[in-house]
Image 1 (cartoon, rainbow, N blue to C red):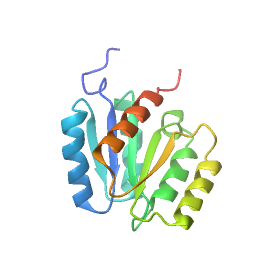
Image 2 (image 1 turned 120 degrees about the vertical axis):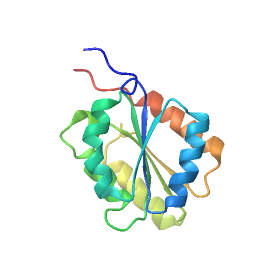
Image 3 (image 1 turned 45 degrees about the horizontal axis):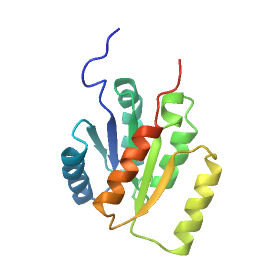
Length: 150
């Protein structure tokens, strides 16, 4: 079966409880990665609910998530993605961002990365994120996130 044009486009799922970040990232991604289909969620709970449909429709998906959110935070979201039984979900590339650049945050991220496996496509960026750095990370993640072989 041939894929529709939407299905041939990469997707980015923006997960953040601060709508101003959604809008900023959306404007930037529409300008610099116009082929990407954008989705959004206010925390990890609706993000996880959307993922099965997103991965069915798109060959490459990147999750851009905040670390600190009410409901399900970014750490828990990453763990649930990595523990998914669906190989299209548990191999997703993830960029986590936070304004908290404390040593504790860095240590917790290092533990998260270790816990989720050495081949985990997972990066941490600190707000404010320069546009060039975020675009470079997105390009890297889209290149890394090849769909699993059937």
